[in-house]
Image (tube, rainbow, N blue to C red; front, side):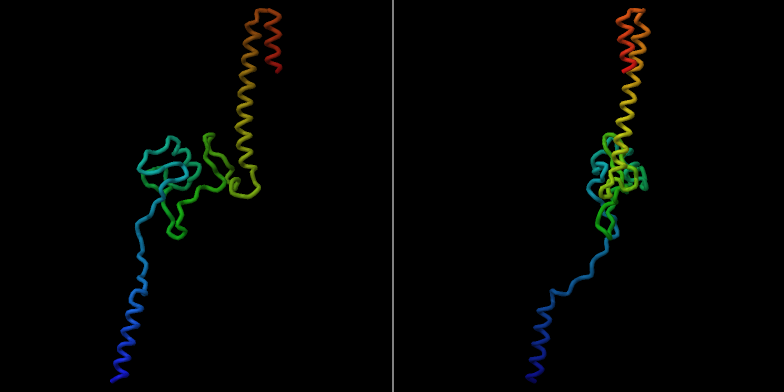
Length: 159
C-alpha cells in the first residue's frame, strides 16, 4: 500500500510539473496579412499617391492595377515579408530607372542605372541645343542685314 501511495504522489507531482509545458498546436491564419505600406507609398487608409499607377507598373508589373485589391501589400506567410518589387527597377521623380537585369541588386553593376541617367541627360542637352538653334535662326532671320545682329546669330547657331 505504501508503494501504491508513493506511486500516486509521484504521478500527481509529474502532472503538476508538466501541466503548463504542453504546447498548443499553432493556429493557422487563413486571412491574408497586409503590410502597412508598399514601395510606391500607398499606405491604406490614406489616399493613393499621385504617381502610384506609374510606380506600380514599374515596381509591381505582375499585379493588378486596381489599388483596392491591395496586392502590393500582401504578406507572404512563408517568408513573412511583403511582395518584392521587380529586381533592378527603381521608381524616382525622374520615372522608372533600371534595366530589369538586376542593375540595383547586383554588386558592382551600375550599368543600367547610369545608362538611364545618361539617356535623360543627353535628351535634355539635345533639347537645349535645339532651342539654341531656333533662337539663333530667329536672330539671323530678324537681323535685317545688320552686321552685329547677323554675327551674333551666327555665333549662337555655331555654338
